[in-house]
Length: 139
Image 1 (cartoon, rainbow, N blue to C red):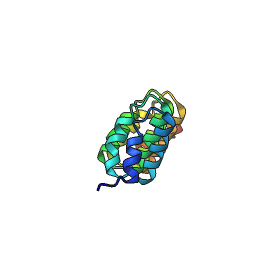
Image 2: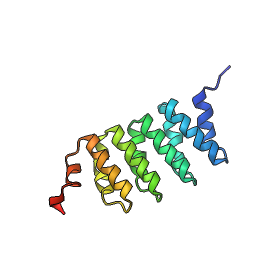
Image 3: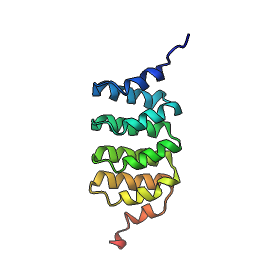
Image 4: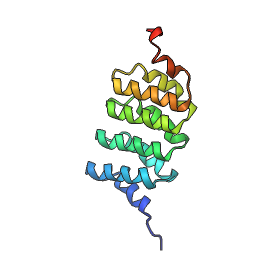
């Protein structure tokens, strides 16, 4: 007899119609999810609800890995500023050097909070070009 794990249940919940259930599932996977949750979370980055996408970006940032990093880079192009902000924050926490180029591009985001988080993320990765964002002499 195959027993469902808590992770299995939350992965299945990512597909239910109620956005609050999908949000709670992503939130739970942020804490307990492993690499098996990455693929369904990536699919949920296209969710119609902004807060579900935000929480999915948070979960991918907590789980990490190559596929999560690639998905978070894509999420930096989300139309919603808060999803872009969370993807930027998550990439900084992961510290993956592959995120440097998109994070540098985020320094030009139309929203100040995304630009600010990009500077912080680049700083956490150790990218020296983050310092230039605060250099008054370059203005």
